[in-house]
Length: 284
Image 1 (spheres, rainbow, N blue to C red):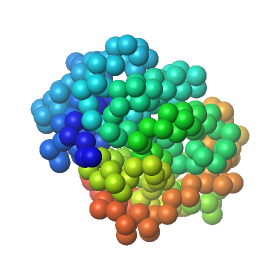
Image 2: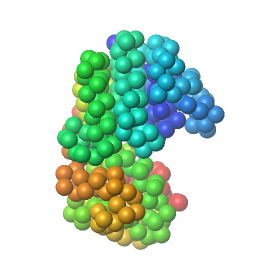
Image 3: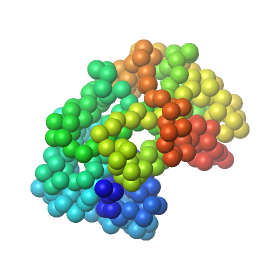
């Protein structure tokens, strides 16, 4: 059954916002959950037609009435803000309530590689939530996005100064995804449950080495950008152990999204890095 009303957790964040916008574009009623209804992002969603609802997924009783009003739920959790245990608890709260209420379709945003025993904390936490979803026998779809192109905003200052520095080995490509593509994919899932229920998808839209990424930044910015391959020790010193573990895994194993199959089999226009940069970085 197609979800007519979807509760979007984290609606004022990047992932939840992308999902909410794509659902609204398809005339799906969106209950946009946020802890702060005064955020500019909340006002923007309201202007697009979403109903803004206030709540915190750490408070199970508070969000139960909201889930009762929805046919579908999109759930995203935040390791970086809450830490391992709290992230697992919050994802479990939403999944358990969805099971108790009997939602028609639950979509959880995990991470690419979560099922492969990576030993990376913010991957393993999401795998725990995935396991709980399966234990509950929820009618669910799991999306496992890879490294978001939007994460490159965190490198903007150094890139605009001419250096793209990341802990990637020279020959190792990194799979990436435009968050808007994920939003469109999730919207498809809610509108075609017969196809997407009880499935998991590792989502990516491009795969490039650091040098190739630098070339695309140079083209978008109209200036020279060089690639600097940082050591894992450098990553740990400047970004911490969690990032170091992640980049070490990128180099040794990496994401495994079947990009060509995704592009061929799903009604989503997947963005290459140069297309994302043309939209978000050109002329900066």
